Length: 348
Image 1 (cartoon, rainbow, N blue to C red):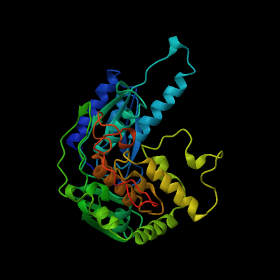
Image 2: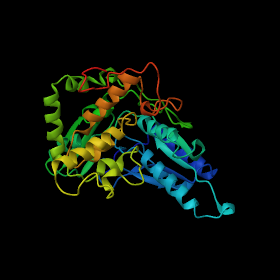
Image 3: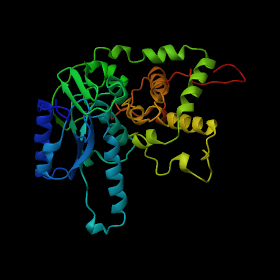
Image 4: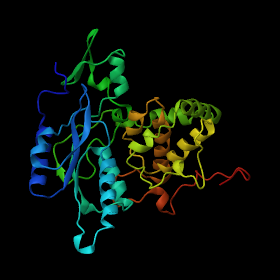
């Protein structure tokens, strides 16, 4: 057992490295955003490759968690801002390559729809995704002990702690969003590195949400209150989200101040409610927010409910097509109106 994630290079990883070298050698991109092996067992971390010889450190495995679209947006928006201070004759274009699974490509499509950068500024290296390991499920497998070594051997995960070895099927450790993912293949790609296998339980995508939305309103609100009581407002969910890129977040504004800096429960609830509504038609269910939440707040249930509403009311799936506008950015005469609520008249 090694301290890394895998000892044998997989075909997708091999193709990914080859294509990354080619793109950098041919100067088709200035930088490639991908994953490299983390410093801890069974982890991978985002990396930025700028030279062909660096491409060999790129990895692709079930430990690659983060949605890298966030970094694409940050790199290009910073470049655009810097170019404003450059003389016209000195201005230059920057092209970013990115390793992208299905949910990452959906986030990139949202960026393009919202005109955050041009299609010619990003090169998408599509990778098939079988899901990524949930860090909480992995910690549970280790019994809360420090993982000293770890490996993914085919469809099995093995960890070594001070108390011995433990193992479990990879499928039991995958993040919940991966278990029912309908988009485990890239939706948009310039380079393809392999083909994936459809997720068997994709038809159960909204089952947990269906059970939740059928509860009485009082029970749903009570659940929301209990979950938000865990939130320490560290804003990790906002900072990692590829669809959160306002120059100044409403939560940070002082004139007017929407959210106070104290520990009032209503401020925490308002922060999360406002952020969730900003995700309407824009959340791709990548699971990044739940992956980084230090308190284990069940953010996904509420975001998935909004995703289901967008599908049921407007027939919309976030980031599936460049030609399909966001539901709150367009109007169709066929739009359903069940979302309109008139507390005074009781009708639509």
